[in-house]
Amino acid sequence: MPFKLTELSIPIIQAPMAGGVCTPELVAAVANAGGLGSFGFAYSSPQKIAADLLAARSLMQSADSVGAINANFFIFKPVELPNTQTQQAALSALQNLPFANAAFDTPPTMPSAPFYPDLHEQIAPVWQHKPEVLTFHFGIPDASIVEHAHALGIAVGMTATCVTEAMAIEKAGADFIVSQGIEAGGHRGIFDVQAVDQQLSTMVLTRQLVRQCSLPVVAAGAIMDGADVRAALDAGAAAAQLGTAFLCCDESGASTAHKDFVLNQGQRGSIITRGFSGRPARGIRNAFIDHMQDQTVLPFPIQNTITGSMRQWAAKTNNGEYQSLWAGTEYHRSRAMPAADLMSTLATEMNRASN
Image (tube, rainbow, N blue to C red):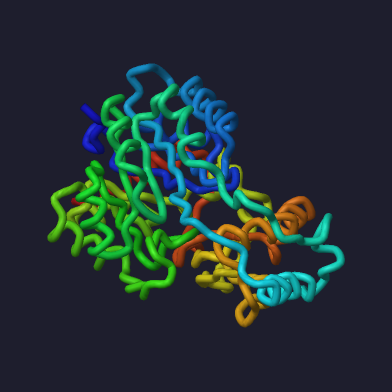
């Protein structure tokens, strides 16, 4: 039988965050504390995925640990380069950045196909290392993947931003639905970026899914402390997923600038942008987001590729103005502490909120 969320001793999922935030140390610490520690394997190679899963498992306290591990993947859609004029406009938007001469170790150029990794190749290490949970963002994987996961006892979850997506997830045979509210940091999980985004809040969407779906629902977005977790459970959620709350943990792989902006730049607020990747994603407002508001953006993930060298330069030089500082609307409430301490604090706050 696939793993069930009810087996967690604390109904908290540390959200999958790509780009190195979810280190094996962070994932294992959350799992050891009784939650579900997640890797964001969006663009990772099979070799990196295997190494991270093995490293996290080696840090688990025992085979009978009270928590579990989740491997998360993107569902990429077929994409082609647009016409030459659009390509040049997108490159010009980057070349005309303030401090553009310094912002790239190498000038941005158009990538060539394939524009994204092959999911079946990425997922091969999952079948070998068998994390308890496998989740997907941006859509639904092939039925064969869900079937294979279930045959190995691996639970499958998928992200929904509306009832229509949730019903499709239920039909696909998933074990739970992640209810992503508009407040959540990082990429919106909307299946079709050309469709109208209903932009439902976490609690509104969670209540809708609990009423209309038979699967367990995980609330995600603007959940920062134990009282928020308790509110999600009271709304009918089986668990709460927290990403931004874990960004400043000691074990987090977030850049120094990312952590600094989260802890000390609360006045900036967060905003949804396509500028970094080509897909809507919520991050802390910075110079790059402001610059890109009226600029040409290439389709996802081509835009992500051409901004890659800029983001690498920004991380290397500790410049938060040109990094994708993904964070939810409540990022100003983040706390810096070891992940085990945060899990303990969240559990205490949950219990206090229920009294």
